[in-house]
Length: 162
Image (tube, rainbow, N blue to C red; front, side, top):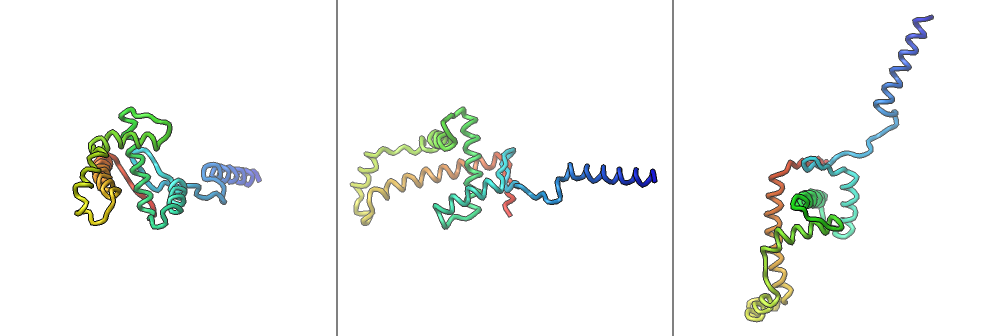
């Protein structure tokens, strides 16, 4: 009888200990990490929220593009904070960093754009001055892509999306 009570108490103790450490049998996965950037993690919940918002604005965007953008934002913010750049929010901090590290090297005055456009109107075949401005943005984007490639080389990035 004493052995039965002791065995029952031990079984109950083991069950409660397992329940404490493992959670209830109905407990499920709350969230998981879908990408790491060094010590920063992007959870599946965060990713799905950003993906849903972005997909509503840009229906053709892929999950990989959204995740890459999220990773790039972490890299840019980290680099900005390392330079002691501050701002009211993450977007402002990143924009200031891009202005300092990228746009400051692509300096084309508005008068130069207009002058170039007016002197070469025949070559633009009906394209407007906005198209010329877009060409300067291509240079900014190329420099930004090179900067992001360099930042990514310096970081440990691991993607576990699927």
